[in-house]
Image (cartoon, rainbow over all chains, first blue to last red; front, top):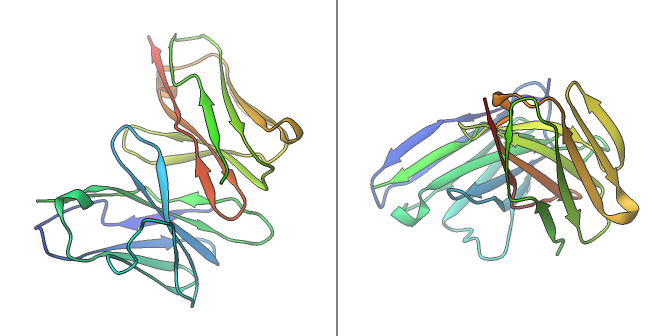
Length: 116
Length: 106
């Protein structure tokens, strides 16, 4: 149980275009979903927290207009990287929490974004 | 915010050896998780352990919340145990440590 999927697993896009990444909780309802970013050989950094039906809360230094997050249902959150630039190239990982009294997070397999 | 320190940063062992990974954190937490990140980047949940001791096969973990540390034990290491091990702590939001890169040589 507690499976989280992400799509696509990898994407290459041209500079200036937008890319959407989907995160789905497959066998549970996620009241809260999280988006992380990981650079090579580094740890995960939290970008934003989203609760179903409300606006996402962004961490300090993360541009909300560049990284659009939508949590439209209890099983789906999307991250859209708008007007992508090469410095946005990274590994993006989502997680989901059922929130039923436990704070445990379950992680998706990640999306590798390369902006050329 | 919460500070998380993992040690050692790198660990190289022979197959069959035992290892202990440590996670120190700076504040009381409601959530502590251990993960193994495989070579493809997937984070594998090992333990959800804000306190106490748990075991799963060759792996076990202990968190002493009052002293703000957690230990991950790996016994009889196998080459497939290689990868980066992360400790993450917090409440609703998680703060990740820098990880321990474990290499198990045959």
